Amino acid sequence: HEVAIQMAQGAKFQSDSNVSIGITGIAGPGGSTGNKEVGRVHVAVIAGDYFLSRRMDFGDNDRLDNKRSFAAFALRLTLEALDRVDENEAVMEEALNKDASDGSFDTSQLDPSSEEWEGSLEWQKSPRTVAEDIGKVDLASLTDWDAKE
Image (tube, rainbow, N blue to C red; front, side):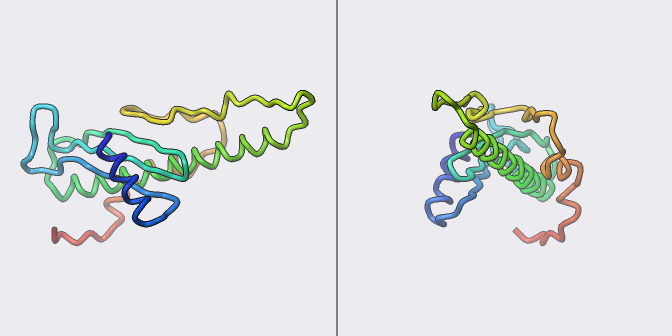
């Protein structure tokens, strides 16, 4: 996870972009070690000042399938991070627009978990997000991938 975050930071710095992605893992067929298995990927997304990092294990597939899965996972995680940024901005805007007589406002919702090593994000009961819809689509099979490496 740390390498993926550093890669995303480097991409953000070099490109001066608002969103950057770092992907590191072992696509196979070789390269696995005791704690690094073929099919394991770490992805980090930086969107503005927010970052999200997650690990996923896709198993012992062939190299091309793993690369496709890694890319699809990175896109899905990017959409989740962007949804989180949008949610946080909406909460901040609402809090700033409230008429607080003592000059304070509740910031408890403004501090989401800044990093996630494994598992899934817990979404509030709210309208469906793009990330939830895209999670049901096999992005790898919708793309015409060039088999050249």
